[in-house]
Length: 111
Length: 113
Image (cartoon, rainbow over all chains, first blue to last red):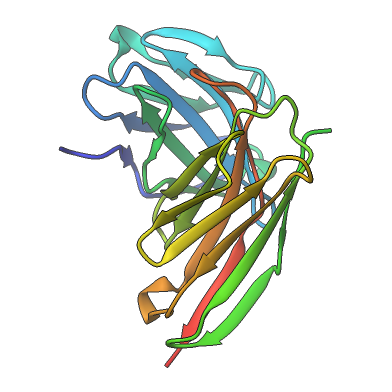
């Protein structure tokens, strides 16, 4: 069984640019989560999809972040325009019965 | 405020030795507590999950304990191996099913030969 796949693994962009992160969950997992770890801090929840619907997006930092999950399969997280404080590792996780499986993350650096 | 505090922040032990990592939480209402292992450059991998009624759970050389009254948990690693070097993260869930998780900052463990 393929795990949770995230792309790209690393991204370096300039402040003000746009970046789109992608997550492919485990096939058949209805739940998809986005998390972020800023350097020196703990991993924090961003949002939760159930199929294509946003169940909880209380962790999204501001309206520069847009997450989508069209068709209830893969998800994208767009940051536009990126700011320096957006740097960190963005993790995606999926689950069917509550046990989350995490991807390896996308390390985003905004310079 | 829901928080998960872990100690120590980092730890170095010799291969073959045992160690115990600590986790205190203030998350409420409590649903379950999970320990994850995160290797460098990888995502967290679940080691154990314990609900309110479970006091201990083992996964090979990893044994987790939970005291829901004092809101404390520990992860004991027996006969450490070099491959145990990783960050160990304590995570508490507030509700079952579709849940959000509160993460600790992790304990960075280095097992030295």
